[in-house]
Image (cartoon, rainbow, N blue to C red):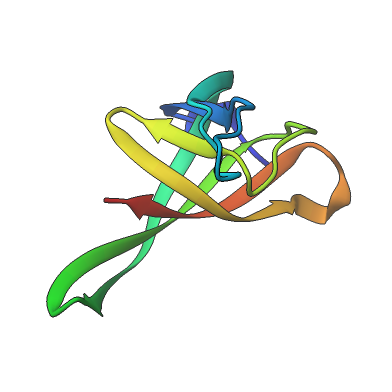
Length: 106
């Protein structure tokens, strides 16, 4: 069960506004959908080899109160950090709490 004292981080939930360019690409900017108090925990820190550079990738677990429309197409803003949602878990299917597995976008 989620306790309010554990939710000490404020996050903004964003969705991409609709817009399609001439090549079919998404041109919409991100717009705020909701704000939630959250609990954020770092799960691991991996270094990925990309283009001969090492880029750190932080995986985070974010716990929030249930938001029905939340999917992996949304993203979170935590201060100046952008968190891409990789998985949304409705804890025990009770529609009370969600656990989001996220990665930080560089």
